[in-house]
Image (cartoon, rainbow, N blue to C red; front, side):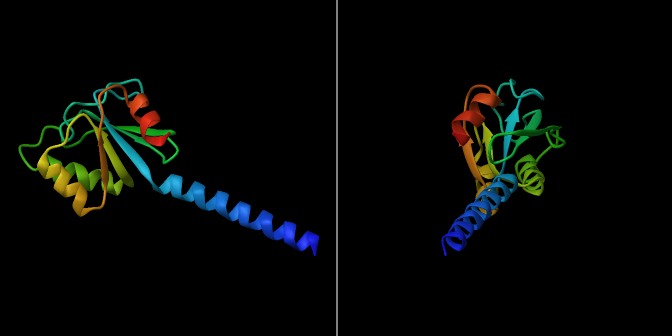
Length: 128
């Protein structure tokens, strides 16, 4: 009986740990930054920021992507949100967000955080 109980507790623990890892992997965070490293400054402008730094839900850096929409004539907000949503971003961090970008994020159920500092500091504040 004790063995069955302990085995049940172990199974619950392992399933919880696995679910947490899956959640963290699927809940990506995008930091819009001025550079392609985690020590880069968070971009003051969201849709026109030069780079997207992608992190997992635990704050581990995954990749840096050059913003393909930073120089479009109009509609950058919705293009950026569609792009980052496709990358799995559940939260976007930038210096400031315009009304159109906030509306686009709301439509896709993406959270946002305004932050001034480095991408690394933003992730530490958001994750911890």
